[in-house]
Length: 92
View 1: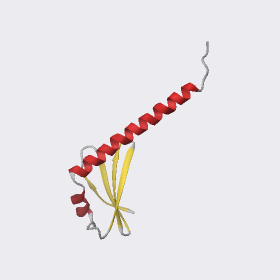
View 2: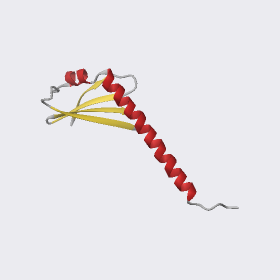
View 3: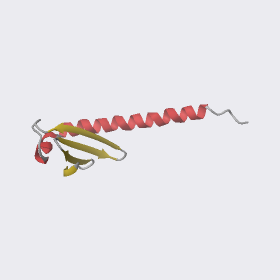
View 4: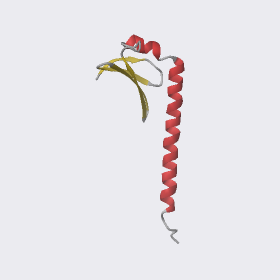
């Protein structure tokens, strides 16, 4: 897999990879990442094709998924912390 380029964005790191007959677009922010894969022949063969595909609407949806991922992560820690607190007896 090799990096064929980057797509500029003010808050996300967007990297485009190529391997065999697939292109992957990886979005990164903080602790989270999402990767979308496309096959050659779907009208996507090079960086310019991916750049046309990744519209502001697409990026907006990716950002919404990052928000959900963060909420899920926080709720998991909250649930785990509550469970941990309940396993100890009160000390007087």
